[in-house]
Image 1 (cartoon, rainbow, N blue to C red):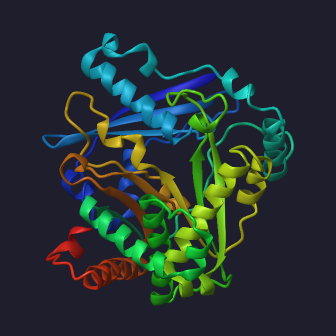
Image 2 (image 1 turned 60 degrees about the vertical axis):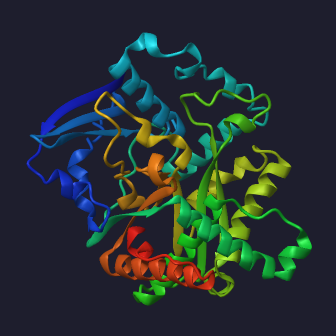
Length: 380
């Protein structure tokens, strides 16, 4: 039996405090998201909780199994639900409805990737234990959550700085490679800042390897492509591996180029090529600094309007356990453009990361002789 639970709750917590960008206790977001009920005979696919803050606002928290749909699919589902609530079902065009036909995925599985995935999960979870369940990852103590906003002018400055450094690298110039995108550069910059913050905070990591993990949406890259509105999983993971000492020596340019090279190699060989090994790569990641990217500025989280306007804040509560960098479009995208992302770190490491992140932007501004009066703190 498949189940969906719906809960209405009331909270006396400070709504404005929960909506801030500066660091706050990661546990404070947890009461806003419902647990998925577990049962031997019921497969919970979605749990929704509406929490009311009297005279202040409300929060819609949702928990779903990633095996049911990926980030793009779930974001589109939430926007569809919101649009129906606001304008009625008749306001939706047929092509904007969630696409549910799973056979379009099977048509692209010529190499039996699904069976290979299930075999890998058998090895990881134990043979015969294919029941859908929530991964129980322990939350470390003293963790704080913060949101970093990078507006459009700041994105341009980062990209301009990167291109200037990129052109100085003779080895890259000789390759005549296409520079990474702005999003890749921001991910690379965050990756390097995390490594520097780790060293600054004295966080002990015995493994010298570091990894950046991200998902690539396969929908429009399949032949033939499938609709962007497909409600299911249609992503493939990519893993970028480097030695921390070498990566920190090379800096943002090298980190961005490594990410770019993995993406372009995948595109050159075919979006599904090598995917049969991706589960093993993820399950066998060793210790060391691992930064995973979740979400995307393209998913339109802040376009979810139930008739009360756009959300004041969108968070991914589970990144307090996964350590993922939750990417989204800026909450002020219509005003200043840009993107924002959330991180959950140990408090000491978070303070070090903020310092490194802001100082890096200060240095870029100085290098380009830009008059940027209050920019560093406005990023947070």
